[in-house]
Image (tube, rainbow, N blue to C red):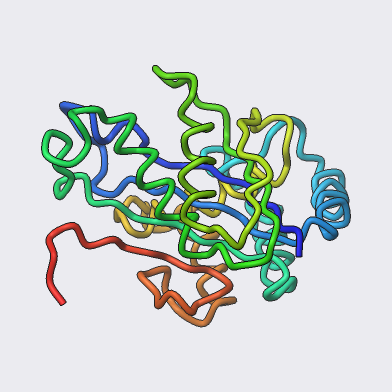
Length: 233
């Protein structure tokens, strides 16, 4: 099976910030069969046209005037069932030891956690194309290294491509942005009571039948991997 993954992140600067704005860095991706790509993109564009959404849609643009669009988008996402899935990893920056485990390199640490988000949902005998929201890296080979690590760890799988795409060029990365933003807002307790963003998150949680919170690996629709870097059992 051919699978596409469209990825984004929230608070990527947490590892280097001296004044962190949140506790959890979130990296997430929308997963779908490649055969469904054009159908899903067309459906999202139809919703954008219906609600007269110009330019990019993203979590930071949720507002009272656009609230119904985002709720309809989430209803559509939910209706796709297991054909359209979301997975994210939540990293507590307070637990990250860059010196001991990441060569004092916050960019290296960031991509190691990117690997963790992807690796555990990659299955044998599939072909994967992974699209990451464009991010300016200090070392240009970061995505190539990510592809190589995923390939070596999944020998019965083909990682066909790992590449960056600017979010304005992909409505599926924009969808990932919204879902990552929602997970980040809930896990970081950044929702203002009575706000449009809280209403949109409440809508998704009603559809899911649960709060956005850490899940088991087996959760297929909206998977949240809260990694524990303190050890334990």
